[in-house]
Structure formats: C-alpha cells, structure tokens
Length: 105
Image (cartoon, rainbow, N blue to C red):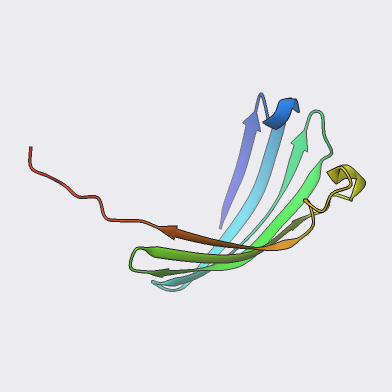
C-alpha cells in the first residue's frame, strides 16, 4: 500500500495549480501476475475537482507486459465538455522491453 501527495504549479492546458492525492494497493499473486487498485482526488485551480479510481491486473512474460484496468472518475457530462472522454472505460496496455546490454569499455 502506498500514498501520494503531489503539487503542480502549472497543470495541463493552462488550468493553473493542482493538488493530487491518491492511495494505491498492489498484490502480487506470482512473479508474473499482479493486481492493483488506486483511488484519488485531483483538485485544479481552474477546473472541477474530481475523484478517480482504477482497478486491474498486470501479467508479465519475458520482456512483454500486458495490463488490463477499468478506470473512471466522477465528472459529469457537462464537466467533461459534453463528450464521452470522461466515462469509465477498460484500458489495455502492452509494453515491450529489452535487457540493457553492457559492453566493455
């Protein structure tokens, strides 16, 4: 379990200062599989305060990491400029890494 408190003097798109507070929990089932959940608040100087959350799992195989999370927040449609950008959604991620090669100097 971890907690985060962050401050930005100049947040995204000219919205001014921002405070981010969150709590995250992670559970490792095996060396290749873990689950996590996060909840937090974002307070923006020129924007609506929002509560956000995420819950999901991550699987690793060799150099490939796959993630699947369900994420959302409490913004209303008008607070999100009458778009569906802020609705809860499934988010999938794939990342590929490689070991760092070392060469003698």
